[in-house]
Image (cartoon, rainbow, N blue to C red; front, side, top):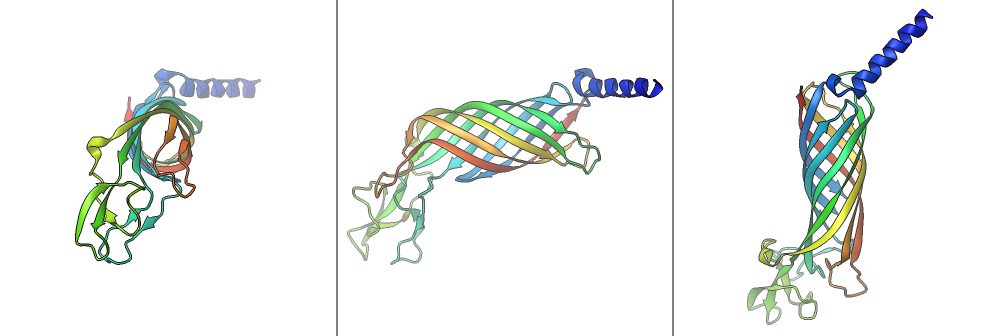
Length: 244
């Protein structure tokens, strides 16, 4: 009976520590970092508010670059100093993702050098930013007499007159918006060795869905564009925890 009473007391204490907001050691987390996925890269910043020791509410945003699987870097074979370009690429594509979500702890960090494992979910709008690609075009033919910057047009430009890529910032004023939505599911492994530090690795998947196909590539030679982007990712996260 004594053992049962002690066990019940310990269990009650454990529940109160994890599920009672007043017993939670931390109040919030602020962290950022970078992510790599199957078709690009990204940067992010998130704020997590502790509801209980196990449950946190996430708010934040990230920006990711998205490539088409058919993108292959090409070079002008006649000019060694020419900049590489992606033949057939009509637009550069960035996605801005404001996110609301949650982080629920699965296993606690028992030791200072241990790992806390959490499951992460998130939803929000996908704001697609589509910027036209500009290239350096040689005229009239090889050897070129002059090089001009023109927006890529598959009906006019070919490997015979493309000298190289122009600056990425050329055409920023022509950027268009493609609305959509996204969802995320991931596992977070937090391994900071200090009480107020935050270091973590996160692995998971996201899906972005847009109202129509996103024209990253010119649809030539059988190339097709996508409306849905399913990506697996890994991210490195760094930040701080705020103690109550």
